[in-house]
Each structure stands twice: as C-alpha cells, then as structure tokens.
Image (cartoon, rainbow, N blue to C red; front, side, top):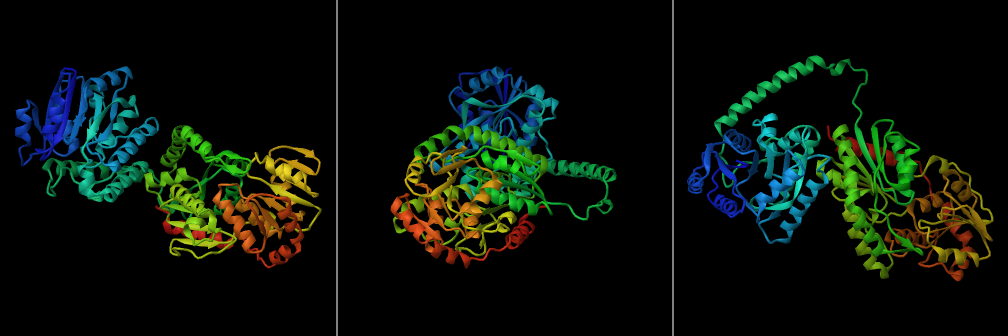
Length: 625
C-alpha cells in the first residue's frame, strides 16, 4: 500500500460524502481511507462504511490522526479534514512532488470552496504565508493536506495529543526541524469556508493571530483561550481520552517545571533590579530624515531598554555606524526623475522586488523575533515591521511625521485633493493598527483622535541646536532625488552661490559647489547659509527652522508629504513654496529674506525631553511581558 488517507471526524454527515466522492474520482487508486471518528451522533460512521472506509474510534483531531496512523498500511500518510475536496489528480500530483523533492513532510496550497472575492483573497494570503515562511518557519494553515512518510510520523511520535489547538502546526514544526519540509505547488486542495462563515472574519483573524503570536514565543495555544471547538454546530464535545491526556500532560509539565526551577537562579538573586524590555525599532531607509530622527530617539531609549534596529539603504548605513544590534532589511524606494515621482516605474520596481523583499525581511525579522522575543515594536514609517506586528500580535508604536496626513485635519492646496486621497491610501497601508501614533511636526493642525495620536515638535539633534547661526553669502541646496537636472540648469542662471547636497558627487561648476553627504559638514554649511533651497523633506526643513534659515521649498511632483511641508512653510511665514523653481519667484524669495528671518526668530526650539517621555510612557503602557 502506497498511501493511507486519514480523516478525523465528528458529526460530518454533510461534508464527508463530498470528500469521499472526490477521493473516489482520482485516477490514482493505490490507497486506503481511514476515518477516525469521535463518536459522532449523526450518520458519519454509516457514510464511512458505505464508502468502504476503515473506521477507528478517534477523539480530538490529534488523537484521531494518531489512531488512524496506528493501523495505516501505507508508506505515506495523508491527513485530510472532512470538509475538504480533492482537485483532479490531486493524489498523484502530491505523491509525485513529495518524492521528487525528496521530502519527508509537505503541505499543499489551497483554494476556497467559494466564489467570494474576499475568500479567494484570504486563501491567497494564506498560501503566500506558507510559501514565504517555508524555509524560515514551516507552518500549516490548518490540516489542509499534510502528507508525511509514515516512518517520519512514527519517529517523531505523531501528533501531540495534549494539544487541543495548533497540533498540526506543532506536528509540522517538530518533523521539519530534522527532516525536509516542502510546500507542494503542483496540486491545490479545495477548502470549505464554513468556519469563516460561522465564526466571522474578525474572530477568526484574532484566533489565528493569537496562536501565531504564541508560536513565536515558544508556547502552544489552548482551544479554550481562543473559544475554539473541534466540530461544528456543537458545544459539548469533551472526550474522556482528552481529559486523561490533559491530566497526564499537566503532571508531566509540573515535574519539568520543578526540575527547571531547581536549575535556575531565583529572581531575587539577580543583580539587575528589573528586566530590560526588548524593543524592535524599524526605520524607513529612503532619504536620511527617518534615520536621523531615529538615531536621536534610540540613543535616549538605550538608557532604559534593549534596542534592536532594522533599517534599509542609507538609513541602515547611518544607524549601523552609531549603534550595535543593527540589522539590514530591504526597503521600498520611490523612483524620481527630474524632481518628479514616477509612479509607474515605482510600482514596477515594487512588484519585481516584493517577493525577495518579503522573503529576506521576514527571514530577518521573524528569526530575530523568535530568538529575542520583543516586548514592543516601533516603526518610523517602515511597513514590514507593521506586518510583523499583525502576525505575531506584538503591539506597535508609530513615530513619524508622515502620519500627520492621516491622523490630523491637515490643510493642503485646494487643487491637490486627488494627491491627498492617494497619499492617505498609501500611508494607511504602510502603518495601521498601531497602539499609539506619536507625530512630529513644525505645524499643529487639529488631531482627529487625541486618545490615539499626539503631536510633538520635531526631534532636533543636540549638535544642531547648539550651532551658532550666521548668514553668509551662499544658499544651501539639499535634494532628495539625484536626478533633478532642471534644478541645476536653473541655478546656473541665478547670480548667487550655491552649495549643493544630494547628487552624491564632489565638484565645482561655476557658481555651484557639489558635496557628498557628510553629517557634520552639511550642518556647518547650513548654519552659515543665508537661506536654504530644498524639496520638502521634513527633517531638513525642521532643522532649517531651528537654525532660523529662510526656506524655499520645491516639492518633488507626486510627493504629497513634501507638498504639505512646503505648503506650511509658506503659510507660517518661514519662506516660500512653489511647485517649480523659476527665476522670478526665487528672486522674490531673496527679496523677502529679512521678513522670513523675523518670523523664524519667534520659533522656540525645545529639547527632546517631552517626546522621549511620551515614547517611554507608551512603551511601558503597551509592551507585553
């Protein structure tokens, strides 16, 4: 016998016939069917007999599968739930693929027995999850077609019968630690959506989210914790053998705990008076603003907490030079051409890079989360840790300026409504469900939900606040994009000296001096500049305001965050905002430098103590033990 199909059941007279019919329709025939029934009160056993199945008394799913495996004659075991249906040639395809891949255990992808777009989308997400974590954390989204060598099943003692939830994930993880695991791609299995319909999306998402979080922390989840029951339309299934197994398990756990306590030091004997909370701090790597702000905050938080930093691109390079425990991830990068966001190219790059980014980033973030067990997550507009928070159910705090667009009643140019709608959609996708939104801003619109969001002044580095401002004979230019050639041509026609950062080159071209980014040099140049010209990056504008420098902002076309910053620069009287750089407008700006300076003198620059306290208070409030 090549294959034994094992199906645990309890009151499955409605669904079991459909599964058995789909099995009988397969071309592959070298199999047996074993139904492990938990004393069903309906016709389940009768139906199994009618279809020629071998029947054994089961219990909870784990017990039922083990009972079936005990009498199985096949070289391979295929565990199916009763509300599944096999697709054409499913058995032949899964056997051929597991043999070809030389795997000991595998699980198949799934399609819903539903035409609803929601259901198809959710099952595609589940399939993606299994593939993305295939080599990182072998995982089964339910017992939807687990195929395993019987020898491996026996070697690793089958399903853990003390578990009444997540026994399938535990089973896969234990075997995959020592044997080859594979997500099989050749065949898909059809899955009922009845539990989704009965429980509802929100409850089901909470169940799977909590159980996955517990997996991260090295413990299994009890069905009672999730209000989960084996079987459907019943509340009273409590098998005697389950109760016995629980008693045996509790006695075993008690013995292990006593032994563990004997070997461990007591809390009172430790020198450290408290355990430092562990924080994962993830930073957007596009531009330098996120990294500069985060460095100031991380430096302060390190006095009380253990910090593990994740960043991409230039942000990673900057932070890695300053701190230990900095890990590189990949990030989303906007494509600029001539100071314009190229949405099509940005989207194409995102589609092309996303599969590798997901695999690499979750390889890094997931493994570190499992190894370290963070108590809280912080994001400076970095979206992968946002998704990680959802998966592992560890609370997230958002610290950035970009959420001003979604969390406040921000003003914007009337003609920019479509840009605003697009920006809100993207920002909400990036960071959602944070416990606390700590916003940094140099302008202060009304906050939509003060219970969740709060605004603080920009985070300014001590070395910048301590600089003594003077006004020289040049204008400092800082660009986010390296491709703004129109800007260069325009500046050459203006009778002023310009020191330019952002083009990643060192050279002099007439009245233009180009410099590569250097943290100390750029702020020496800023403190002595008579004005600054920039796109609309928040950190650069904030530090220019702190140094009382008039600002001419030319936001990159399509970058709504820069547009808002430029809009408020002009609204508050700190300078001018224009969608393009023209000689006439720029000369008008230069004529009004004294007026802007007078307004900037009224701006009070405070230290960062208030926002640091807010962050620490939020950590203490939301961190898990």
